[in-house]
Amino acid sequence: MKHSLASRLLLSVLLAGAAAGASAHGDVKCKAYPKTEWKSHEELARKLVAEGWTIRRMEVSKTCYEVYAKDPQGKRVEAFFDPVTFARVEE
Image: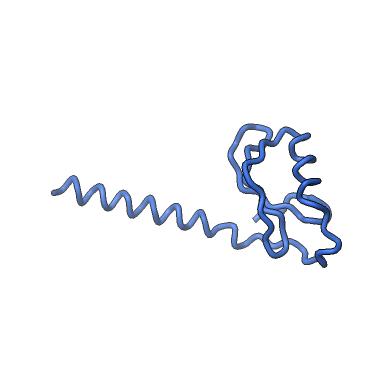
């Protein structure tokens, strides 16, 4: 019984940490541009691959490109990029 309670507590702590990490990107703000000024996400993908990134998935948020990838150092990241300049936007 104690083992089960300890397991549940650990699971709760892990889930809370994951939830906090998942909501952390809510602070990312890209400059708002009209969609007509945005460069294509394919162009961003080509740029990142040329720089050594391995892209798993890309999404379009309201004002940013959101990229799930491995960076050139091999670290798994969720990164945000300005859709006009392709500058990386930090949290």
